[in-house]
Length: 546
Image 1: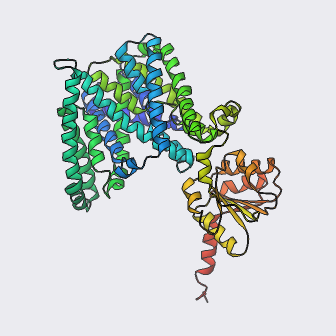
Image 2: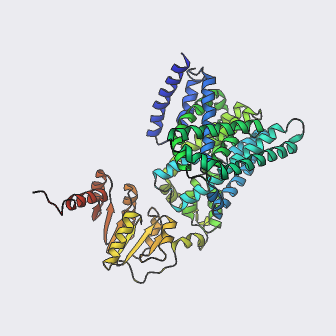
Image 3: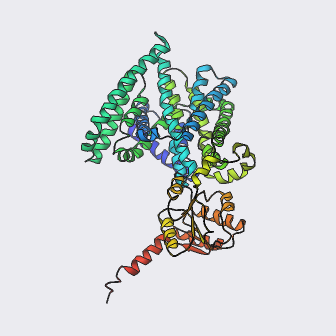
């Protein structure tokens, strides 16, 4: 087959296997690695255009690191909360130290064990953001904390790449120390030039280029590739150069526009990286790594969440928040495989080590996906053993709940204080009813501390929350949450804890209306349909049709 026909066949195979993965609720990374394994020499031997696929793979990694740098706004980095910093650094230190000891204990050589230990520390920002967004938990307390320590990990992977580059170059004359010093000097010079460009050149240049969306996209890719080339020439790798290119644009007003245009291209080109990786793996060697991969996978699936749970518990968070945040680090990421591939290119480790890390990735990504999707049932199962990770008074999380006390018990409790919930609360309050709001976004709860409507921080998915609410004289409990399963769980918890009042819940899909009514919900609210009906009635009030 020609190179074009080969790529067409690979894309078709990726689409088919990707569809199966989506059906199984798995990230596409798993599917694409399997495509490479099936298409490679150990499978059907379909891949021969190695140079073309390799070039696309390198460009995909460049854009991946560019987008990561693009999301590291200087203001965001400066405002990293203590919990994100402490949890991120604590998890990194724990995983590197004990991961290295475990790798050595199962017979892995020193330098390979070091690479394996570092690879085990990184969690996939792409996968976590996707899963939390699908579950509408990205703005929850544990979601915000997870995003914070994922940023710490993203910074750490870049530092690790620089250090490993110094180690690789330092094996010759001059030693590691001299090479590291030279890299620091080169990095300082590059950062100084970038700082000047970020201040005086890039904002004005982007303002001109932004008049054409296509030109802005071309410039972003060219800028990332140019600094990746510069980074490679300077000795601190293409990946670090691409990261710095993205970071240099992170504080501009066009960050989101560039990121949104690059995301789909990044995902498409990463397909070729994982296909290229899978094609190079020997299925036989993967089989020999199963015992080692099993031990390392258990360490990631259990050890990483436990250290996050312990740190957050010590810092004053409830065990449920720590548990849910901990689940987000129960896998290794695409960065782990990129980092291992960098080690192969520098001659530090061989493909067998990459195969081991990839196998751990396949196991942990697959397992952790289901752990996050079914986090609440998993928490309910583990809850009896988690008390040791919670202080008697979880002071830091209690700070989000606000200090306002209710003067009287509420007539209405509203879950979800978004646009619909807050407007409903204000209207009911204006009519003389006492309203209590509940929202899982800590910033929303804090913002209501000095308003007329008292709002309490809490997650509707947490069954313990219902026990703490003053519901004895509450006439209505209203949920403005769009998720059907979450509404059903909340309704079940309300009835389980003896609430006898009326319940209203929102439904955004026609099929959800019947399920809520069959469950016993008193009234189902349909915001879009109700708004459309009201608009239709009032549109021609002043000039009715004759």
